[in-house]
Image (tube, rainbow, N blue to C red):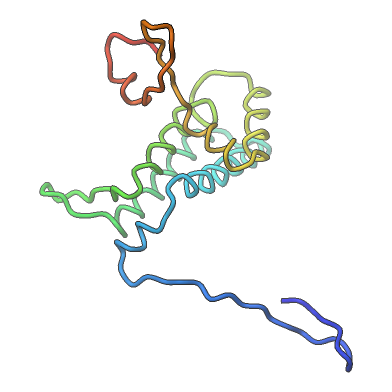
Amino acid sequence: KYRAKGTTGWTLRVVTKRLGTCNTAAAYLQSIDAATAAVVLSKSLVLNVQKAVAAGEGGTWAKVNRSLGNRFLQIARTFGSHSPTGIRQFPKELAGLADRMYHLVRGPMVGPIVGHEDERRILHAAFLSSSYPQAEAMLLPRLYQHTEGHSFCEVPAVTLALDSKRVL
């Protein structure tokens, strides 16, 4: 809404834009950008953590875990498919969202990694004020492996975490 000055005084004008819709859950899930959804969701969670710390509330890590778990449970109930065991499976289209949220909760942003409170506050402030590409890089870190040919190649974190011969 905005007001425009016309010849007879101020007039209230409303500007609208038509948005495309979809009629199936599958089309809706395919239209979601998991990386963007992860950045928006994680900024919301980090802001809630910052508010809780400022209010002097304890147990913020456990609250974030519960909050995120409840959101994922709601997504699974709404869009998940039934498995043969009767358990709802998380939608495959949103696997990138789950991966980024795992790194958010287990990493230094809101995870239980020991660090000074000042360091965490600086990290939170940097994350909240960062642009989209920077926030995405902070959520899902890239890991590189040094090969025998003295070059580096990017390796998925899952691959390194599951390899018993590697230390992260």
